[in-house]
Image 1 (cartoon, rainbow, N blue to C red):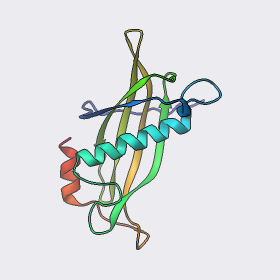
Image 2 (image 1 turned 120 degrees about the vertical axis):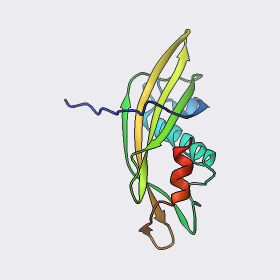
Image 3 (image 1 turned 135 degrees about the vertical axis):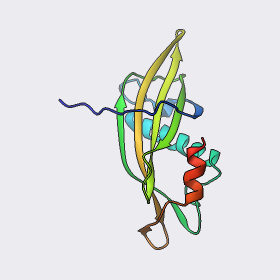
Length: 145
């Protein structure tokens, strides 16, 4: 079976911590794949805010929409863990960019990788329901994180 391989950038300039809640745990007793996506969403909101933007208010009715996502699971997370999510933007195009995520936790004095991921983000006008150009100022702000 072919496995997804995510090549993370050398520099992940943003970091946040997110505690794992009981509702993040599935019937298998570990953090569920849906919770990983939710954790990535929270981290993404914080990352975009660090750049001085809001996900639904980049510029003149333009927001962000996720075009794709890839997650490579590396380890299990459990209730009580505190995930560290490190991020960077890259692979810019005229209409968007990729966001890269490295999710870890500390347990028993060891750093454990939970997942590596990336999301394709496209600028989108939610009123016109169409793709828009990536604002140059936003690209510069993202590059400086």
